[in-house]
Image (cartoon, rainbow, N blue to C red):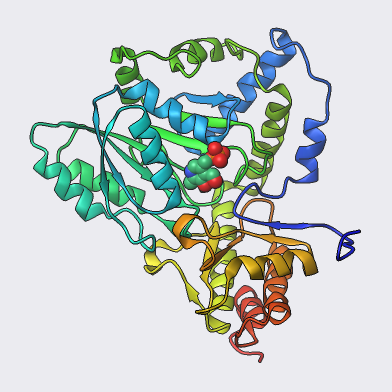
Length: 394
Ligand code: PLP
């Protein structure tokens, strides 16, 4: 028998996969239809069109039945060839994994070192590109929201740095944990390939990967002779014009996507971003009141999707997370790679509201007591004050 009998809903407060709204679950729970028939074409055209609005692009968005990792690979295989040099920044675990993939695909990666507490540095990237007079660097690849650290890189500033260096490199950005949560503009910010996934801000189960593709990236893919098949954009984009895919798409996830896109549009993207900013600010107020440190070291780069909290010295974050799961049936994010045991992550993205946040933070604070972690009480009240705008009610 389980140690603790859990009642009510599980709190899934990891930074993705996120809680899937009932509306989206119901939309998915429909008969799978003929993916070559007329009803499917209406679905296909609707989701592609809706995705363009969420990526803030007028250019193609390719949707794969894949995890985010597949969409990473697609971005590389379409635009780059073995031997190409690329510039990446060590923002954390996911930037490191993308780098490993790039190396497996035989790219020459220059990995600008980082301390996992800061985003990619626009000035360092700009300086390296300005030095690259022969234009050996074919792409700059950055993770927008580093899910392992809760640090959001400043994509418009990096774009400006690339432009100021007058460098023709492609700009590839991973928005897997930012799209639909943190302001992001594929066209306005001059991004060539935006990589995304379904299971975070888009409020869907895992299983869809996305590439938004600029004209420049499309031209690069046409000129790129290196082998690829399943991930190749051209055939997919051609079939997408009439609402179809060249293979069997993930029909039921696309039903869910249509519903999730409708939810984002009903709220309005600007309101979605403001909601995430507000919940993130309240979370930080709680962390400060507890007397703990936020892993992100630069306030300009605080993530609105998640907050990574540093455990007091000598206390194991994973033991603490285990106690919270057992006592309160809440999943918090683990510390990844070199952060294992020293941080835990609070996801505050996706299908989320003020009371979800208050329940989450209450679980975190009660968990400190349950696990014997030293802290200053009052984080929950500090977050409540942040939400209500009330300065003092302690
Ligand atoms: N990039 C970022 C920023 C992520 O957060 C993740 C997953 O958490 C990935 C890439 C990998 O995506 P997936 O696990 O869907 O393959």
